Length: 332
Ligand code: HEM
Ligand code: MG
Figure 1 (spheres, helix red, strand yellow):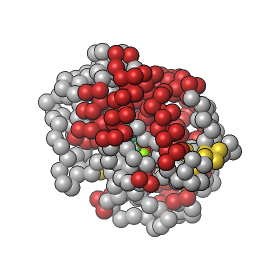
Figure 2 (cartoon, rainbow, N blue to C red):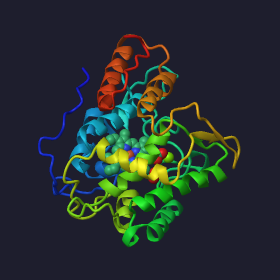
Figure 3 (cartoon, protein in one colour):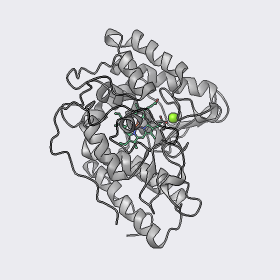
Figure 4 (cartoon, rainbow, N blue to C red):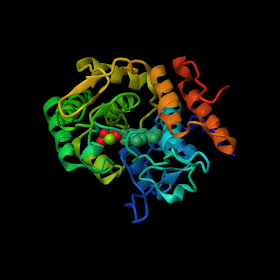
């Protein structure tokens, strides 16, 4: 039986999360880490199994507990990820590369690639990772991080990564990929994750006692590179979800608007105005289900169909606040 998504935290206030029950231990040789500094850090502190393989409900609990990510946003990210990168039959997902530890796979074209799989959830123009075309898109990249630091110094208040630095760096990463990556893809759902992950560090990586939207470079390196909470780190003082994150995403989009698209060779960005834009949240939800997920599961049956439908229901429950119309790829 697949567990229901966890509900909101009961104690949802500020809290020391770098506590003695959750010591930092770097990953061992068999532990998996991937492209998400938020989840890698939680795994290194034991909020997620240190192996890097977890159930979706464990991930929902961990991101609420460790950062005070709001319950519905947590469910949105986790069930999206599980449907495109996890194993619906065993209810396990890797936060890193593909692994036998998620159990026997459904038949191809299912991938069950883990969060490091390129093109399902992971995508181009990441802040501190290379585009897949250039190498390992899950690994921390020092060149990209020095630009992160430089943009924080030039554009951020008090030389921090704040919303202004975030807006400029998001623009810079897209322009850089347009100019250098012949296989750049920047369409839904990646456009949404790219923008939300640009905003996240200004919120969740800032100590909840300070909570001023200004991430200093030392703390940034701790999360992005070492995947460690800064000492005595406290999470956000209240759950943070769509109502906080979406206006910030809109704010940085307005500074540097773009049309979704892809490169056909370097410096040849073909706009795709027929695909869902960043502002169309329900369109992006539909795209995840009807295009990205069904590409891997065109015609499921039996227990696989049952598991997919359950997880689709969990994903829809996370977007209900947006009044989206539910889509049913396998019938109602
Ligand atoms: C990036 C998954 C929660 C912070 C990513 C990426 C994935 C991912 C697949 C790679 C995308 C890419 O850059 O190509 C998830 C899932 C979550 C989650 C499934 C479930 C709750 C969080 C949380 C935070 C966070 C709670 C912050 C505390 C980030 C940041 C990046 C990122 C900052 C961008 C890294 C970069 O561009 O260099 N996440 N994430 N994530 N995630 Fe998460
Ligand atoms: Mg990436």
